[in-house]
Length: 354
Ligand SMILES: [Zn+2]
Image 1 (tube, rainbow, N blue to C red):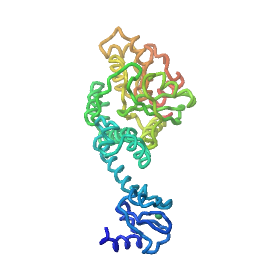
Image 2: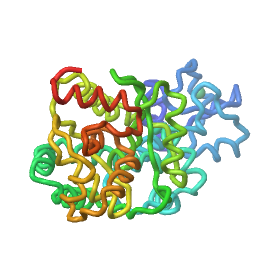
Image 3: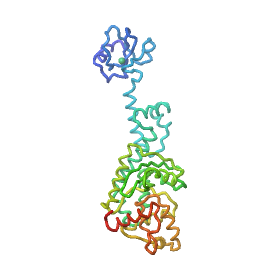
Image 4: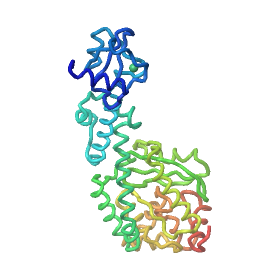
């Protein structure tokens, strides 16, 4: 160390932050030790000693400077490490990343890693991984919008193939329908539309819940009711832009600016329900079908009551257009979100104005 001292001293004189973490200097007259970049008054050279670690300075009876906090000397290095861990998660988000694995990768204890990551990045490692999944999903949809449209246009068989494609691209296993949404993480947010308050709930694969009410209060309870076993999270801030895009599309649609609402869906239901819901997406806007017609189209002419029940269980309003199914005599029949809303939607689609 001795022969380097002129350089070390020069770094102190220059407040050279690039040397932070490489060494520390103690001031014998004040009894404190500092980082090279410390902004405190420059001590006299003869009162200064140099150390490689905070521990060495403390063994010499020195205390850490409150201003430059040399024990947090690794601040910038730690930050760099946490950013590197972000990159690592981004590259491996599709794998199961346990906290233990991540901590090991960072060369830290689990508790220390979790705390440090959150401090520097603002999210827990788990939340960060969720965000990566969402981003990949969003990116994928951007690139794939024409395929989405093509799939809707070309009939109800193709949509399930589309989901398979999304699954493989995201590296997420196809979500197996489990009662009550068991094992699902659902992110939700709410907003205002021309036909009332809406709440959108989404898994990492797409929207699984889109429902209306007169005010925000009841909506979360509906979400809970539909997915009693799922884990519900308010939409994280960094995913808000995605939610905004969905809301914008929805509001465009509801004000008659676009004909077909294109949203990424994660349809959770029984095989029969999915069959009905897939078929509903093939009914062109502005057209209506009776429950019987739907049953017949599915080669289950006896199943019109089951079709009606599947319509009643729809959790994704508008995007799965159950409002396009009515009674054989033309009566509107019921609508989960109120017959007046059904009426408005049919009118919008038939006349092109809300
Ligand atoms: Zn200092």
